[in-house]
Image (cartoon, helix red, strand yellow):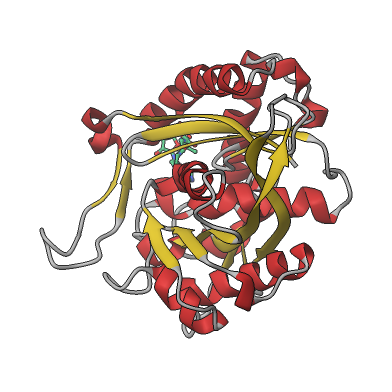
Length: 325
Ligand code: UT7
């Protein structure tokens, strides 16, 4: 049976050039390179310059994804940006990206699901592309998380970085089997009762300020390792595949111990895990597309490979999706 699938046809990533090492941070807060590496696997993170807004990072990643797909800005009729660090309260960063890229009038909006944002955005884009409502979509995860840091809180400020990753998604006829290219299945979750574990203490309709990130890291850690596995299994079931069929596991890059813990729980071989947390730290919604772009650029991830992406973040939100590239 012929079905329309939303297929990833190009991937791109962008990291701002300014690198901040653990050593650099040890001069700002009471921390050490040893503690950060041992507890998180993070060695460094990238930081956007003062004149770079999140839309600028998004545009760079989008340009790369367009080039990889053999498309131009003129082809784009849908832009979804997953971000929690928008340029402005409104308009949506997606609208700003549309203007900066010079895309024609089309659909553009942001998705706010924090670190799970890219998985949510892919699933939302699938609703347009695989139903014939968009012919060429840009799905972008972009963040300037360093702007949300309380630089006196060593429990959070060492964990995050800035960056952007993007994919182009286009409709392609498939046979309705798991051999089809495209987004094959997803599972999304949110438990709003766990807000206090990870949130930003400001916003336009409460404090009128941007606010700073607050996290009870060890509680989030436990939640992540336990609950992500359930969503991964549900996404694999929705896709009609086994977790063991997956070629590449592309987890949200928050902490090496979390991504290894989830992979172990699921029986996924360590060699199948794409890991960038050491160099990028936690870039929230950008971390999965950045890791994907990294795996594609170094030649490990190839067209036709079965990918499993998963994430968890503020909300708490979490989720997973299965994509054949
Ligand atoms: O992307 C959204 C999802 N977020 C996450 O997935 C993050 C999840 N959480 C984590 O990754 C980990 O919980 C952390 C890396 C945040 C913390 O690691 P932990 O092993 O859970 O440490 P902890 O919070 O239990 O703290 C252990 C100790 C504490 O000292 P005491 O009370 O034992 O004396 C902290 O004060 O480590 C101390 N500590 C630090 N020490 C040096 C906390 N941060 C630092 C630091 N440098 N940067």
